[in-house]
Image 1 (cartoon, rainbow, N blue to C red):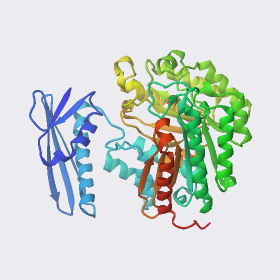
Image 2: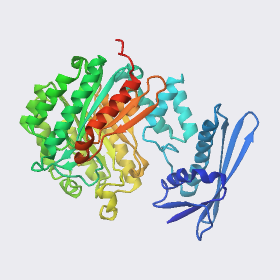
Image 3: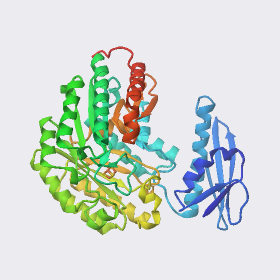
Image 4: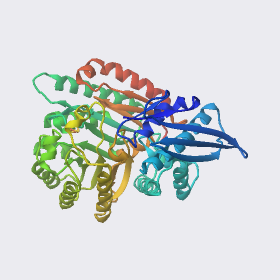
Length: 502
Ligand code: SF4
């Protein structure tokens, strides 16, 4: 275990942040405040310079050598909170730089540790910076590489091409409907995904609650004559339930929600190929739904077995073509970089197989070790590719997408993601998922119904976000959904006190 002692008491307020940054470089690193054997040491020097400039210097003593970094910038105008945020960023900056020198490792996302780096780029653009200025500012303030900065700019341009009114969607809402069942649980998963067992009556009770939630939200939306931008069925795997249950659910949705003709897209995740049947596709078509995802994750059977997917590669291919031939016009597929025992050869194979199908969109995830997943809890059982290999795989994914006519259109990051990389959604022009864009950029209120559904209520004036989570577990959901409905309606009344004028 690597240990780094912080020499200054004033910097100890930000220990968690320093630990987070240090762990990007070392397998395990602890930031300490007392002397310890073999610990490295970091000392910070702070100065206020002429011209309202703040300057910080870090001096790191690591394995017998000394490394130094200095950074200064104009003090931001604002209250104590603004100043504290700026100082935290400046200290992160110099701390990261000395670690980069000492380890000879470059962090392409710099000190950006949040899930949504795109939001920062959009913020700067909305403040009036042009694209190059926004990229420059992100590079300078956050030590982000030019490559990643330009990726943000490219994605934002595609988002605005796909949703030209992206910054003006706050008077509409989108709806997320969470169905928490899957045939089995994948080893890396922390979503609400309960093995579907029909005998317990749990599925039926959950669906009763879900119908009720949809009806109640629909009543409120109808009263306000609200427009719905997108509707997204996620989970779990929403196609885990029976075809008749899907049919009833979509019927309730169409009967309850207003202005359904104006909804820009309805998506149903059918991620697990083993849940897709002709009868279920018929139901989707009956209700005019033709956007689904069929998720291979990998095209190597041993990997699928190792991660507990319980379906074969052949089944993915068969169900893709079944869906396509029965009329699904927009199919998304997900691949994951860095699955156990996979390297360049397996990923190249996955891309070659994807090439034969040409789905409308392809999301390339990088494996992340989420704390509650089976994989994280038994980490030693799973051998994953090293940092350099996952970087090469990401690059290969980028090149493949370009060659095959896909544009990157949304991006997000996760904690404990391999190689400190990112997840990127690619799509053929015009086939982007609007829901993925609006949820990532947090431009409008999202009403979540069903298990594990997170609602985001966005204040139309301040942009402040309040989140509300429905329980993940169907048993808890069944007991609490009525209370959740009340709470969500109260939030919605607060944000939309009057009927929205159209
Ligand atoms: S299919 Fe998706 S939601 Fe279901 S267990 Fe696997 S990762 Fe989780």
